[in-house]
Length: 213
Image (cartoon, rainbow, N blue to C red; front, side):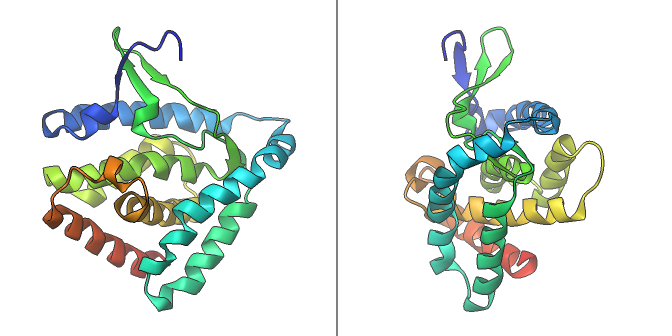
């Protein structure tokens, strides 16, 4: 995007020395994201119709293709969750809100770019998409994961507390962490981590799927 000159946030997330700075920047993005999702949009149905095929493609890539790594007992609930994700039409989503699409500008401003994967769904998907990267990085800096998740979710869900939305968020988070560990683009998101850290992340995913599905 012309005018967004700076460093993408990913560089700060994967650097142990700047991890907490990255958390602070993400917290600000999540507060903005909450406001974005709260906006009324009269074109939701039109946007959904035009983006539905791409939403299904992403769900296949990032969710259904990870089913092979789940326990058999979790498959039915996982399939039901993905089907629910595909039918929800609550708000307009960025659709690809990762730290490579967040620029820390030279003057300190934060710029969110690349909205071309926009789709319609539950805002918890966008939040989990972004937060999953910090969960992965937290294993490398020995951060307390549940405290981090609670803090970041509170930055996004600043008003009413929705149990269902939080449940969807935690399920999205499981899938997005697993996708970044096992998916075709894993070299980007977790390729820099050693095998011990990867094993800990995978064990976390196993526990989370058992608890959340």
